[in-house]
Image (tube, rainbow, N blue to C red; front, top):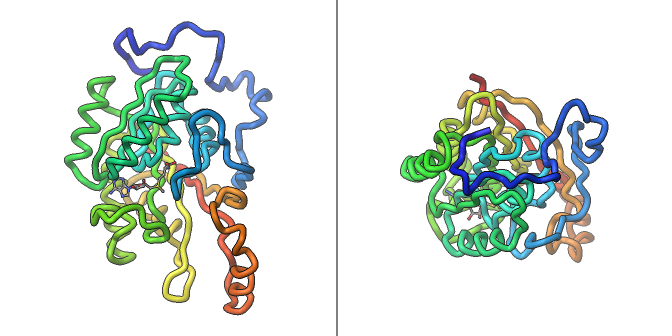
Length: 280
Ligand SMILES: C[S@@+](CC[C@H](N)C(=O)[O-])C[C@H]1O[C@@H](n2cnc3c(N)ncnc32)[C@H](O)[C@@H]1O
């Protein structure tokens, strides 16, 4: 656990939000299989599906509970509407998000402030481009103000290239001009993330594949390879069911099915939650 100024230290509490191996039989909801069937979106508290492309809160919940302990600091370099930060607040982990879009970042701070904060943790959002060294410098400074400059866990949930366009900003990864350009800029993010992650700790990548030019583009595996090439050790490729998590596809199910049959395609019903470890 990191050192924090006294005002941020969690109050004494009976609520134990950490996992203890000696009590492993009690954690029936912690997933240890590679097939993640998480069901419908958790809409409790300030969690909302108002944003296209936010992940369901159960994803950061699983990662944060499994790979961090109370008082640790979690960094999300594509923090969007703050799903990770809300979960961290509930679980007694400090958190720092980076989000390119100032309006989205501001809304995330509003939502995070509505979340229960039983452990009095820090939740910060920095508006910036996660590919840039300038943003990394600001993140490092923030982490240094609150600890020793390292994050205990990093989450990456980037745009799945241009499947959803998040803004008009050319620095937005969803506006990358080509597949290669997307991977090149994603590599910059991974490099920055690795530098900010404490040795021995985990990075989670949440990503899906896409269709392009009439073929299945294995974006998830290509991003996975970038992480490995940047020195992270692959620990898991988890396949997560997205049925019931997507918005707006329900009415069109039959059209998609018709197209799939006609064109010999398969409809995406999954994405990946990949886990990596930064070795010492
Ligand atoms: C898939 S969403 C992440 C959603 C988030 N997990 C949530 O639950 O709200 C990707 C986010 O990355 C942001 N983004 C895109 N390019 C970025 C960049 N270069 N630096 C930082 N954020 C970026 C987008 O604005 C968008 O909010």
